[in-house]
Amino acid sequence: MHASDTAVLDEHAKRVASADAVLPPLTHPGSGSAPPLRVRDGLAFASRSKVAPGSMGSLWRPLVEYRLDVRIAGPDPASALDGLLCQWEDQLAEAVTYDEGYDWDTAAVVIRPSRDTTGTTTLLRRGFAPNRVLAVRLANRLGSGPPAVPGVRIRAAEESDLPTLVRMRSELHAYDAQFGVVTPRADAVERLTEDARAQLAEGRTVPPLWIAELYGRPLGFLEVELPPQSDWISGYVAADRVGYLSSLHVAEEARSSGVGSALAAHAHQLFDSEDVDAVLLHHALESPRSTPFWYANGYRPLWTSWYRRPAVS
Ligand SMILES: CC(C)(COP(=O)(O)OP(=O)(O)OC[C@H]1O[C@@H](n2cnc3c(N)ncnc32)[C@H](O)[C@@H]1OP(=O)(O)O)[C@@H](O)C(=O)NCCC(=O)NCCS
Image 1 (cartoon, protein in one colour):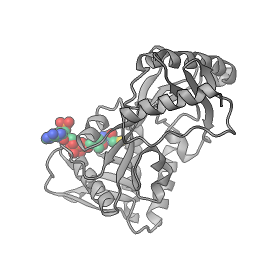
Image 2 (image 1 turned 180 degrees about the vertical axis):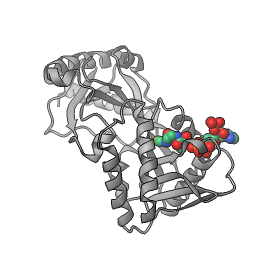
Image 3 (image 1 turned 30 degrees about the vertical axis):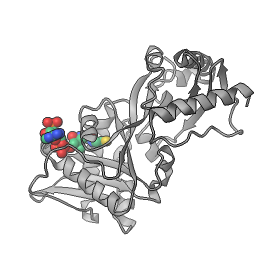
Image 4 (image 1 turned 90 degrees about the horizontal axis):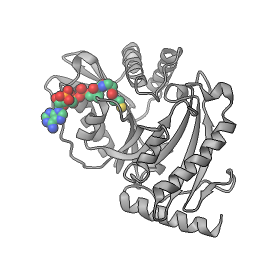
């Protein structure tokens, strides 16, 4: 690290902390990673991550993601960001092979604290779109959704629910794939079936999968992760016990009538009874269904992932 790096890191950390008190203290990639990109008032850490074709992970993202973690400071942090993005473009132009570069299965990703809005225009100008949000709901937040619907019954999913779960999980995957990060895959149904079967067989004290029935018909499902299963995501928020709401879906014919809110209320009861301090979930910002729904149910944006897909345009 250069001496000037410390000043940038400190100033960046201070601005971010004052923008959002729920963010954890910022950590920086370790000494093993590539040297950072530098401009006068900024530095950035570039990395690349890959998931295998045919893996469960491949359903939710492009196979190859190039990521830039930025730290910006000074009197004009937006132009520091622009300088860093400009250097990264040069790196990407070299790193991304011709085949990969125009391939829908690559993306360039910049993840920013949602409330640190510095540099938003810069990202838009360089072809990035705010797509994926990691939203947070702190314990005991009140929602402002619809009142409970009589007739909705929520119960733990059983092995005999496998076909229903697979159908609804496939509907959710196809719906979310419209928004550009979740990706249609030929083997999606197979992967979703295997994963649901494995979760049903786990026998956890608090079941991860739940079904909403309206007058006996299964019309929605919920999937939750409690600590320690959710520990993989806990570093994104300043809270001790963190839960993760993996999925919530309501069949098209039953939407807008309170089934989703009943499932969300059930999830929040489960998290409360396990003393969870903050619940995190991912959703597509462009979704006209999930965005208003989560914000009416007590969530708010914490981290925003800006995507450019393919990585090189
Ligand atoms: C998002 C989703 C789960 C919401 O489920 P839902 O059962 O439709 O939601 P609810 O009926 O409980 O809540 C929405 C309704 O609450 C009502 N509502 C919202 N705020 C309200 C308020 N303040 N006062 C009174 N009523 C209110 C509205 O009727 C609203 O429907 P509308 O926006 O169509 O008018 C569902 O639309 C869905 O499955 N979408 C596709 C998959 C998806 O996006 N899942 C989330 C993935 S992250």
